[in-house]
Image (cartoon, rainbow, N blue to C red):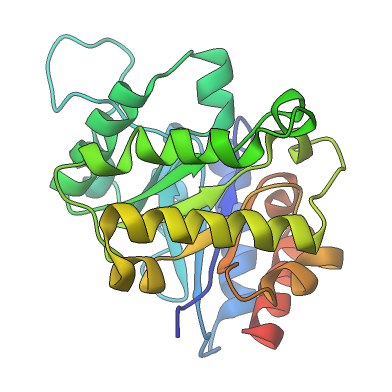
Length: 255
């Protein structure tokens, strides 16, 4: 059985004080519970130390939203994977659709970043998924396959222990739209088949694949009950303790 992962991506929200308050409230909600899966929050860089004071291992973990493709040097404004590990992170998100859109990041850069994440002993959450125009054109599965094939075979080392996938139907992020359970399962099943071809059947069987498109407490149980959906990469709903806890509770019920 794959352990679920509910990961909150705080994006450009919550400074150190507000982030510490949310982490404290979430830790209090989870205290004493033997969860079936893992819970992760990914604050902005400056908020990570404040959150790490509360996220000291199970049941609450802390991650980062991105990292540099370099280890050190004259790279103003960048943060290395090793620095993130020292700050208390266990995971790093790479290739989020907003990084692809706004920073025009490429497969080659994603490979370099994930390799740095792995070299630091951290787990990478690799994001991928199609745009609305691509889905309407009937190209969703082709786009997903190209994104997975453009990165996974080029990694120095990837396995179920250091890699998590997050399927993002980009058309469902922040729009209130959510992929139907049928669409979500189809895309996750397709993703797992591609991973089997690239990394082997056993890795594909054990690798966690998250759903990352407007998952909320109201629809989390339906999505997480799908056989190939192993949790969620949560945006806005991770910024309120009641909403995020509701998603965790949904995962506990169906996983």
